[in-house]
Image (cartoon, rainbow, N blue to C red; front, side):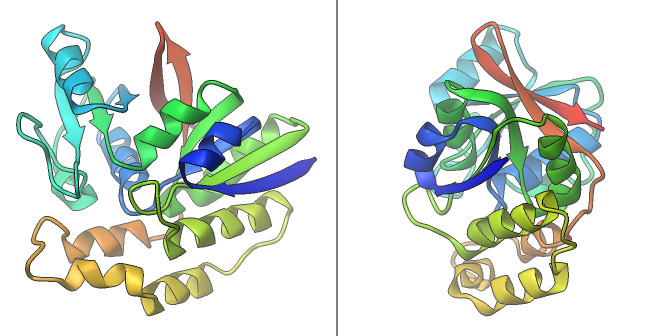
Length: 229
């Protein structure tokens, strides 16, 4: 079994086999929180207009996500695990659009044999799920910032997943400490960007907060994410 690590949109396009698209801050941490709060599924899309049209057409009830870190006009929630922490999504379909994570899912879905949306909060469950498929190749794609610049948290999550897949325990505390020591997290302490809540950072770095993976399958031409125990 080969484990391949790629980055950004190019990496998502090149991913093959069992694929995990990684977005720690914040897309797939938020997706995990939404599913934990009862959502039946998440439709992941690349464009704001597509998300709103799917909701208007009755294919979902809630639009969630961001452009430039902020919720676009017409969206019900931003891309914040803290914002959705107490929301009741029981039985609802959520439509998610983000600048990195969902872009990677849309790109990777074309060639992936099986596909997961990954972050640190679902790390062990995701590694277990990827390993269970026994594909010749596992691809781990760190989506980075806006899918155009590498980020510490996504690259380190990929390395942590590789350790777990290969049977090593990894070092969650070290992963967390290195991320917190880097410059990528400073924006969560910037008062000029109140939409980046510092609690989002705390949740995103709560490694293995959830004991489920997020499996993405194509349904009627759309990538749809659900919990996988």
